[in-house]
Image 1 (cartoon, rainbow, N blue to C red):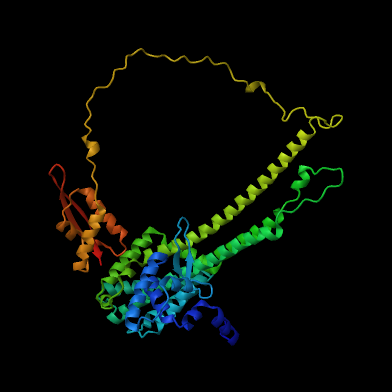
Image 2: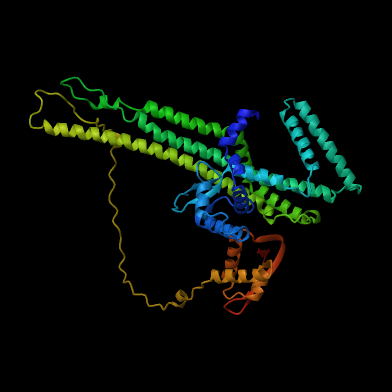
Length: 508
């Protein structure tokens, strides 16, 4: 799109990102939304939680800027930011919930990314981006060649380069990346990973716009066309069911459905839709998820990367991608559900119309029952023909008489131990969570082995499973697959038990 005067003037007046940057409350809105949504990668937040966070932010600002700063309440600010004239937040009610939720709009995320790019960066990498450009161009040229000989020559050239590198490594010539090159590539990985999360919001918004368009068309389609009134019958003639059913709206409904499914297919088959589908298929592979997790763990162990103090959430970025992709998939599911409800409603209306017509026929028949029309006006032998083939008659088979053995049933008198019914084990997960919070107040992280050492397992394996459940529910918990630790306990018989599992670290 060319950046001419008219285009920029239209964006200035209508684009939410420009309105955010031009707002006098831009520092408050941008800093708060970045801190709450972008930095921790939160997709959706309930209104009560978001209001509480904004109240804390406003309280801190009023303490430093004066009580007159930002006089409105947190709820008023959030409703204003979610209004149509702002469009910085999306306020909606999830299915099955009566509490409002908020999410960032793609325009707001673009504005926040631009503001973040204005800050001075301590290290600007260029080598990795140049190599990315060369690699992408090579893939484009190699993947677009239709000549088999040319592609074979390219593959043989790459194989020769790989063989030469293998020989150099075997000879002891193994060049390593210096710290600068490692930092350059890691920062490029981090930037690309966060850009993918922003792209998910934009893809989801495109599907949501389609869903809104479908709902509007369904609502407006019912009004202008409505139910066509039947043409009046000539004097002395009654309207027959066939004549009434000929007045249908199938043409209008078919055109509407064709338009809806056409737009749905247009987005799914577009470049963006195909790219998203390919990305989702690649990410859903368990083997690729494990490979990506292993690469991230190895990258974070490099001294050069540790000197950058990277965000620990980047190690679990592929799980954030999955969560963001699920939001997009749910949006598509809602669209499909809306179309199905539309078809069900129309089928119900058609069935109701037919039942009304049948009821009218019955009413008219009862009205002329005492004085039927003269002569025979309808003859019908049977509703359906009856066909009886000789070979379809079943052969005679004598009934089977059951043989009942005479045996006296004795009442059971065995003694059953019922103490086991009252010896159930209940693990208090709230108490375990309290121990975790208490330990994290004293140190930044604590392992499961340290917690079990301080608080021995009282209920054996069931309590250990409860610890692991709390760890899996906390997104900050780190599971170190390469490091093992042993946890021991004493069972009810006094026997010592021990389990070996990956080291689990709870992080503040």
